[in-house]
Image (cartoon, rainbow over all chains, first blue to last red; front, side):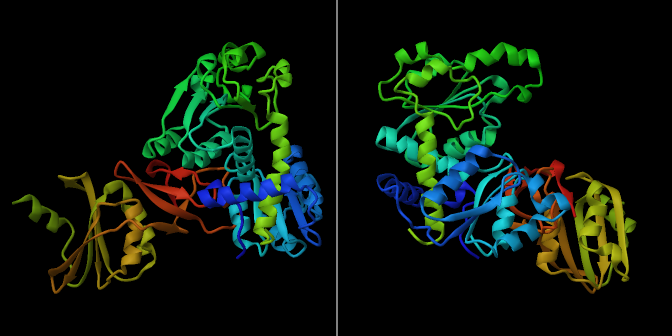
Length: 301
Length: 155
């Protein structure tokens, strides 16, 4: 069975650092035909334009070819084909499979039956490890280190899988965490227990203004209306988690704002012009990191 | 007549075989089906809703001429971790055993997460066994979600 990247916990601290190191090489020298002659399949059983384009850009810019589908309505799963059969078939057509699937554990199952490596590009609410690695790359690039940073997460701590994965990955680097969220969307106990067991300090608060003063990184996420049982509660709290330009004056000069995107209204548009806004450059880093993951899994780097 | 004697009268003694005691009453039929005792042809006797100082209400199964493999018997640790086994030879208890919770549970339980791939494709379920506050929990190797005792459905 070939090596796959399914869950952020598949990689050790050294492996995170190795991927980051390879990604640096791609950023310094973007024209590298390391994937020449390789075919990568992008199987998106659930649409995700941003993630799919990022992976496809990574492959094309490294000289590889892509095939796949962007929506399960154009795949044979609408004819009732099982995931098992799709993977066994497609793995004969390509050197590596990037997949997104609405069901949790789908990528893990695919990795058990596939003859080629699988990269999980999202399985339901479970894992999306390439996002975590690109977040780490962005943190390192902007702060010069991954160690001893104050990271403020804002928005949906309960369902935000990017938050959960980044919290676990960054726990290797002695961080301090702040979790700013409405009471309904607090961080689940299992992650707090994980931090407690590792003696990592964290503060939970509903006060965004207070938390961001100490931040090296402010990691914004979307607060979705459908997460609230009570729509009135949503209306009451939604504005408390919007980042505005005026709030940045009291923050550190080196602070950077990140966001996994897409953004709705949680970062005011006027913030975009600030030097602290980093979310669009973050997407650019995603291409380098995905090139690094793919070439590493194929044993080319 | 003492408490102990009363119990032995309720489920008669066996000459050779295995006695499974301290089964919570509400788990009796699950234990029977987990061990495949609903499909065998040799003599089995059992009693349920018996008084127990430890459990309040317990069940007991006596199976003649059968001695289980540890791997089989450990399956029941998932639903009845405090079960005690006595191996009987010639009406005497020759060995006592407790069940051990396995580290991994394969193909025995269902993941409670409706969005888990294992509930949609033909997949043998696989779990890592965790213990939290003395209770057994199953962490799905696919979706990584935890199924607790309350939501555990055996296959």
